Image 1 (spheres, rainbow, N blue to C red):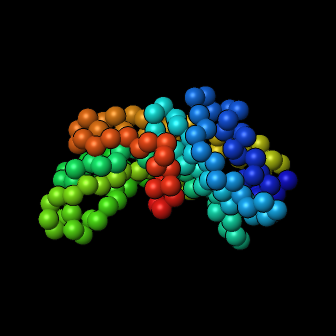
Image 2: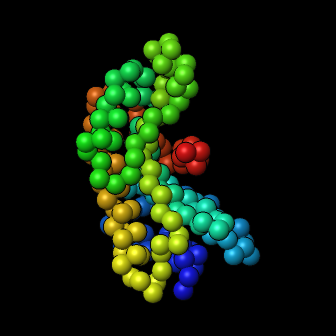
Length: 173
């Protein structure tokens, strides 16, 4: 089984092996297409997580966790997210998004905070089971980190959690 075939099995594997992953929304691959393009939104420990498959020569899986949205922007938000990236994260990277030039200049506005990790399809193969196990472990560990940091960020800066209906927002990152 090649990497593209392995990618197509990921939603089933997450549902079977990641404890607490609750499937919320599916944007399946185009019917009849051999390309593994699609998105699956899960709730994992209260954090909305989008698994997005991108096709092409370098097929990849993009795992995006929405930690907080409608966070009142302050320079301290960027500083804290940078500190988490440098000192606390083991997997993934945290990002702040919004109209950052405006927010930095004016010192106000709302932003969103998300975590993302990319997994390249060429590294996945059923002929090498540790690659599949590594992907499942990564998904679970990202969920655990996201849940912990989402609580911290919301308590410290305000905002709210992403709702199930906001999975489309995570597609843009």
